[in-house]
Image (tube, rainbow, N blue to C red; front, side, top):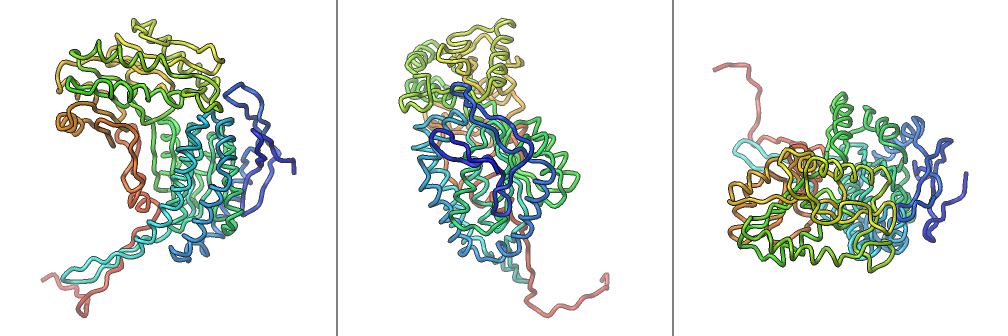
Length: 490
């Protein structure tokens, strides 16, 4: 077995984690850092035998793990979260180098949230043992029984947070899990395996098989032994997963892309709205829930754009390992080309670039914060997710027009609405989306539902909703009076 990779001063295994053991592969794929395109080494590619071994290991672990009480599983999961905390600095340095995520965001947001993703759902599971529904005829005992082996597939824009966000409820509900990390940023998931090992999770409860979506991922989601599939990523990939799962009638949770509106009403606090709008460039725009379509009332357009432009001008672009940096690199050269293609085609079609519009001088995978106007509702750049630091700007003259524009795409993940509170709330309630923030952005609670409508996904994550998905909900019906079957039709 080859030696560990050394990345940002962190020793991390390049191998799969199956049944509590590191498992190599004869096939490997190369990794490079989005910061400077330097090689990070190569990592094991999941082949058919690795997928099969992971499923078998998860199946073998399932009876023992599922029979534990929620309190017993909580003991394991609390230890798991504590081990993540012990290696917080390693997670920060590793994901910043591997995925280009801001080091400051990792330290102050992502790692604490990753720990909470585990401990919150472990605690919440204690409340879901049995629920009683009492009727005139019977006592109903509603149970959340473990479903079986869950496959978790996560994207590259926030690997640690999104993996633990799914893994917490999956394991707390009594399932065993197989994680397929993002091909472009798999290393923090590998480090999670070390934490599971240190926390003494029973072998096979957590398995990690690395590889491509088309190869490793397709083999996992098409296997009839899988009980649940939870995926965050693109719409085209989701369609393939849904088709494969549908053949075996496997339930899927699909959290997909967004093209969320950011509405600025004529009675909005323009400074507050502009500062929040500038936040949409964070993580180099690689955030599915960002409000990327600015819809601004025509009466306040000039003032809003001037204020926002002042804030954007001050944003620091550079190495994400520098705590002063506010915008880092795009994950991969292919994604850079995708983002640039959207902008170039929009300009060729008559759009106007108000600021940005191309690569930043800091490096070949750094893109300028960009704002594009003079766009039409049916333009590609308005309708499709760019997933880079690119926003569009449209105006409206009335609430009805704002709502029409906001609802005028096939996506429906999130949204933002700024204005006098009652006014903004009334407009927000008319926007077709899974969630929407009023005079704010990014406020989240693990007890609340998260997910989209239309092309933005199927299902909800968070609180009870996560357990509804990761459990087999069963009704045990006990009659109150002696029951005698009758075939009489009278």
